[in-house]
Image (cartoon, one colour):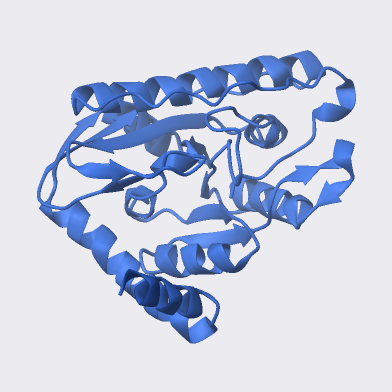
Length: 260
């Protein structure tokens, strides 16, 4: 029976109608978790300060903690997610759409490897949203394929180019399952306790290759810090970053990459 269920699920994922059905079911489950969980929010003053300041900003979270992110859209603000341009991205776009979240589509842009799966277009679209619409553009800096909890340069470059701050954010729950995926994706269960943690905003420095790398490291450290804090509040085991990681050393590595 399990094999039959998996086959049906694969079939649904690969058809437009099937993805619409799965998106509606996924959105309902997220709503159920949201409404039945007793949430402890820490650092809300950081979000409030950015909303009072006006202008766009970039919430950054690790890919493994995407599940509840559609529910964090600030009321009255245009919220946009950068999502991979593939079938799974179509499904995710359908889910977040139920919560009023818009999307820009594209995978990681890597000029050094002559690879661009829509990432340049997604990066440019996000920049327009941030500067032209004062939007909130959420990014997973380790997406779409990792390494887990290692930030690519895209978020740092986007913030520096547009002059908008980064807002580290993460959630955790007492009840849930951590999948054995590359990102150790947390699927929360309803009717439990949860934590949502915001970190202090990170204002972008003046542009330079050295500043991009230092800012990338700050984003990585602070995004991990808020996730660790959320897990500690829920007495959940911390998720380690993937190792090893190759750190590019030549200037061509400082290219934009969109989280998926």
